[in-house]
Length: 61
Image (spheres, rainbow, N blue to C red):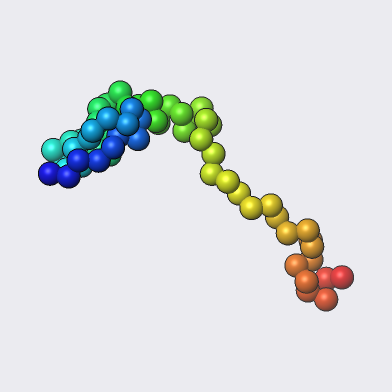
């Protein structure tokens, strides 16, 4: 069995089909992570849109 670090509590977690919460060590850690995403504590960085609204197409200028 492979042992990984739980992303919730940094404890040991079994990364195998016998652990239904993998990569988390427990249901509690899994739910805390889900709650953080749901409350928007985590965000995926997005690139700013390009400044040129015409995207360089001379027909649109």
